[in-house]
Image (cartoon, rainbow, N blue to C red; front, side, top):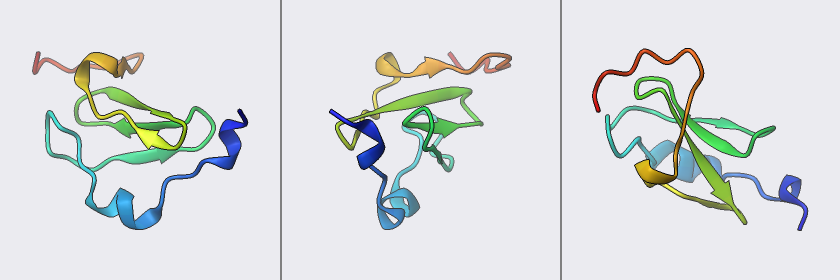
Length: 68
């Protein structure tokens, strides 16, 4: 399946927040992830659906997150 065909609806992105920090998320089209800079995590998007589970998130390299 072509992941480039899936994009996050801008209206959805406006209401989604990081489940850990409640901070804003940034959409990374290239990696198909929602980025939480505050938490230092990247939440995957699979088949156009954001997976907002901390256990599924990838830690960003160089992250200084100490909340866990």
